[in-house]
Image (cartoon, rainbow, N blue to C red; front, side, top):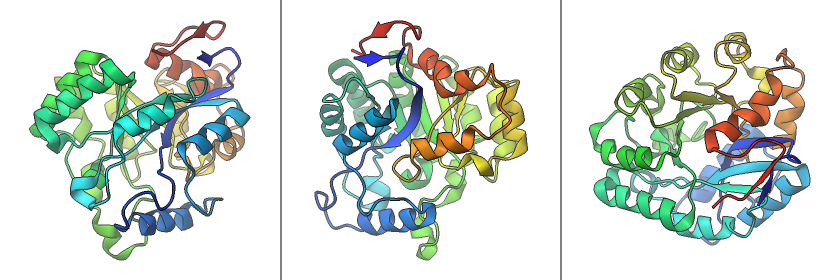
Length: 299
């Protein structure tokens, strides 16, 4: 049960990692090590879901947490959504479970999405076009989007270039073109009632991201994957004004710690009335949670 009145923030972007050594030796450890160097992450091995929950509980921050189903494109073994949901269910006071399904799974993926929402309490879905190797506006995605729209839960999309594959030979085979936020404009048109969250400051397409979010009222932005001191001024300007009700705190744990992100965010020129919206209130509204002075159990 989330005690929303006591939480100081809701982190909308954290990654579920398997215990080191529990997955096949398929190169995933090399990717994680390269990302840790890029972000200067403070851990030796990626934290488990239980370790993530303990860290966030200590920080008094709730976390949306998810895997990434990139098995087809990368060869990295899929961390099953059911496993993630079951692990997350041990920490209902602090973790909010999302799932991830490769859109190339087609109608099978759509059936899985419906089952995960109905039977496992999944609250949203994560997509990573760069890792999963697809354009978000490819019509093959539509059956899965239809299932998500029916469920009324958010679809969270990686956008822009962050640290994944950075510095690795050939970028680890990952193509940045898939994560241009403008591809999501088509999705927002055809699924106007599906909440769409564009993750990260969308470098090098920041203005495209802002344009889509301003134009399409079902589109949101999370601020994960970048330390706040690097946010471009135009992003801060829009977060303070036109998009103040649709911008979300996100860290990109475990690469960036929530407390480190919040410390830098405190130094940004964000208006006093807007700051609590970004840190917690917007996420509460998007997730359909109760007001800050009530307790609500996530089903």
